[in-house]
Image (cartoon, rainbow, N blue to C red; front, side, top):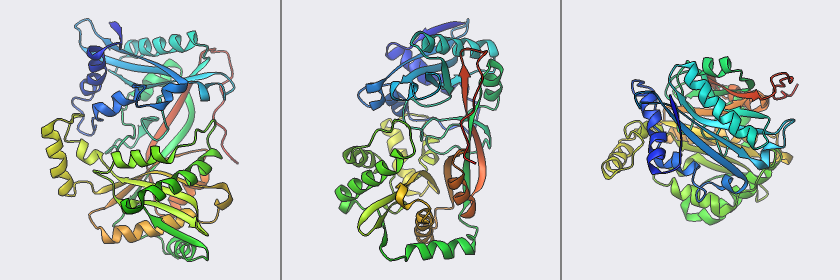
Length: 387
């Protein structure tokens, strides 16, 4: 076996192609867009490079065949917020071979250790938690956009090396053909009619105001939840939505207001993976034409919940139920949507889990985020779960 550091276009292509090789015979896997993966490692496109470092490697066998890859990274804004300085690994792909997997893990561990880290989490993303985060351990069906999918044997590779579960996550499925619980609908409708409250969906006509409102509510909501949170500029959100315009559905993005002030956000997109499944990660002229054709045929029948946030003062007021109520009205008008995937909820966020279950969500996918302590004599502590 030979380990190669990614350092130029040739080795970057090897890094991208490794996934295509590993999943060549898997009919469920959906190849991410090459440009999306490349963007993670591009300092011009990923703001995490401003306060982080990253490296990556590919592994080939004696016949020069691609058999594995891994990335190691440190977000310095987050690394020292833990009991021990902790880096991350991600974009791991490997054949079912412990020697190959352990060589990749060892390489990442030594790289992180040299930079002062004492533990590594994985598989995670060098960026926000809504992308490429976690290891799928149950529910090996259609992966939605940016949500992890991997071979079943990956869990054995991680656990055999010594990784332990730091926290668990669940992805919920809602079949829109099934009626929603009557009690939930009544409560949700009541929430939407309370004095002072207003719910508005996104509109390109008012994009400047609405993206500013979205940023205001999002930043207040997540600052109370995430360690070392970096506020998002409304222009960044505006550009992100513009980039997604080819697939974006205005009526799947909502903002809640109280007395005219934004207090909560809900972001949902049609599931792009239902189109990407036919493109193999490429955006050539032919694939773009295919993209337009598939979109017109309403190929995207699944909606994916990306994020939801309520500012602290209004948490527990049923705002989330109000969002769901309005979305159900949208789905009634657009019957080509047949299912919703809400991905994902951690085991240390029981309130959100309760909401999804109450709304008729069924836990369909299970993921884990793992941690490996470099000092093997040190006590492993799981992420705390609220009582």
